[in-house]
Amino acid sequence: MRREWRAFRGLVLRFAIAYAILILPWPPVRQIYGSCYRVIARICFAQFHAATVEFKAAAGENDTQLTMQPQGSPRVAHLNLDSRRDGWRATAFMLALVCASPVPRARRLRALGWGLLASQAFAAARIGCTLGLLFAPLVTSGAPAPAWAVLGSRVLRSDVAVPVLLWILVTFRAQDWQALRARVPGA
Image 1 (tube, rainbow, N blue to C red):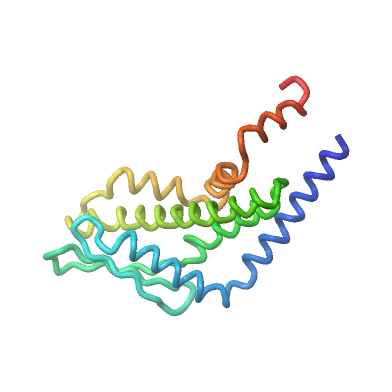
Image 2 (image 1 turned 90 degrees about the vertical axis):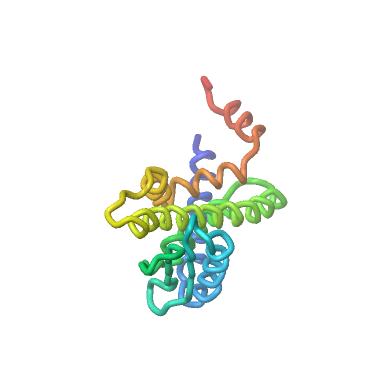
């Protein structure tokens, strides 16, 4: 039992160090990640339903300006997004979990690549839900946002639960769970 606690403490320590290394140097990372965040947003959402959407760099904490205009409508919505809050924190959390994982190096490297892709899909899903929340009221004044956008925006707000799920999916294999169950008495 003592050995398991020591291994768990080591995992937590490795995670904390990796997360600090990834999250603390935000000002220099902002330029790189913010640019990637806007490129992904443009690729996924240049056209959203019957609206034109633009993502531009902005100054300040909210480093991305979203502009949405339904085609043939004079109405325009503007929203400032924070790439750190909406993408980088969850990405850094998941990457730190992968770095701390007690798996072979080759699998860890593979998990880093797949995890980075999955966390960017997660960030894109967050943007999609935000656009869904904006679109209906913009087209028809007072119209409610679609249920999928409301539910998705609530579910995808977690910077912990979804990254942990992604970490489990990209890092561990069935044989890892079987080995763990074999070590747990009564499982």
